[in-house]
Length: 599
Image (cartoon, rainbow, N blue to C red; front, side, top):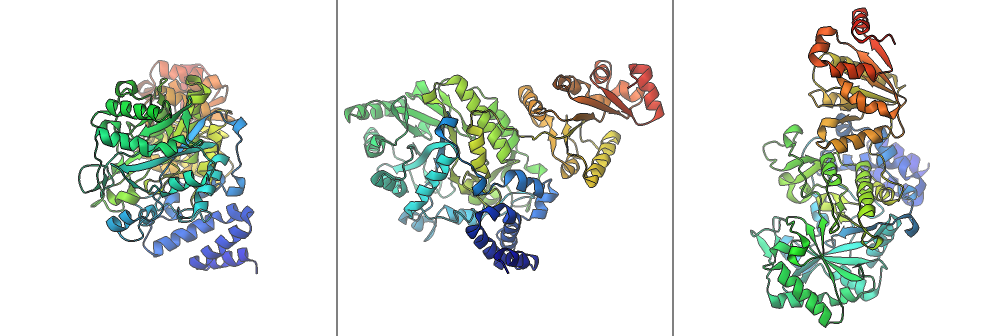
């Protein structure tokens, strides 16, 4: 019996540990079968996690929250052999992935957190905090819970990054008045010359605390600032700044500071650094800072550029009251919508002195448990759209040398933002990066359906219940490829989401972003638009320009029309519909009398 058949047999018997081991061997021996076994492998892993108390997530949980397993496998999960590569000629964006080096043991962490602590310790203990919550994040078998003491790990990571269009890594640099932490991986990179990948530093100049918040309480090791410390800091960086692989902007080595306003006098410190670099024969340097908690004008503090730092700075509201919490008594964290994050950042004005940044997802509950913050509705498609949109902005604003986009992050596993492959998505985040960086323009967050159904809202009312029933029958019949576009939200939203992909325009504040969503839904255009009510007239006015046949499904008699679609709304429905379906003879007669339409 083949390993695959044996694995499937063990899986069907509920022997998930044996099945998981066999599936991993199948993938190792026959990589082309990875997509074939991915769903069973993922479920086996989750079943074992449930058994051992490390996860509450199941495939059924995801199905119950509108998750489509077939769609995930088709769109979201990408195996390595289907990842594809990208050449320098195909990308003109300088994509830099932020890199956390805390995946190896060192004495201070052993002392503070217990022997053997690494970032994986946090990742492994993650639990689902609410229904549909994607936790824990489990690394793909190709990478496993790696240890950066193995020099080959960084070499393999560099190969993956470059194949996906990423120019280099921005390593967090942990320096505390002369004391360095987690310096080993980059020290080895500089000393050995391997891997051959561009890199730069971001000084994480916060206190290191037991609560992972950079604050002033429970400090494990703190920052101390002085002019003497400023000089020592930049001198310690000289071996890196002189390295030919170090990332440069207009020929100047790029040094990034995470929180410049934590410095007693950021402008004076910047001048000391520049002076020392000139004295050392390095020449001029380029200074930038992350817009994490600080957003000054770069010139005011002696810096050249600011760098966005999502998800910080978004206006997305906390929606934790709208999710089904695993333990409402203990959860004090926050939940926000990734779609709103994408909207906020794609609508932002960059200017010449701000580099954009994107993040594939974000969730720090692995570190902070029930106090953590997470963002729902992230996906490779949304991320790729965001990246491609920012790439287009950068092309219009910056010369080639300055076309930077920072990605937060390559491997922040305990904050749920990593491009590295995992069990749920495979290599999809890397594939989404490659597609987003290509010069062909933004990828579609919403693949085009054959039928686009329009509803006014998801309220529990007559027309909406009729629509819900109709779509259930369509799904049962399986003959139509359809999606639902609602103008406004409502209590039936989850019911609609169980049936099909549902886009709600009121989720977004920006009219420009709403129009962008419409343009993607109509590129290429669906075969037909079915509008479920006369109330959609104003939306039909926007849609008609795309040239798709519009059919309006009419329930309302005249009194309802006068109440819900008075004057211009009904006129817009009539003038922008190609055909009508009337639910009854009285509705038809009223439509003919009032609207003068016979088709």
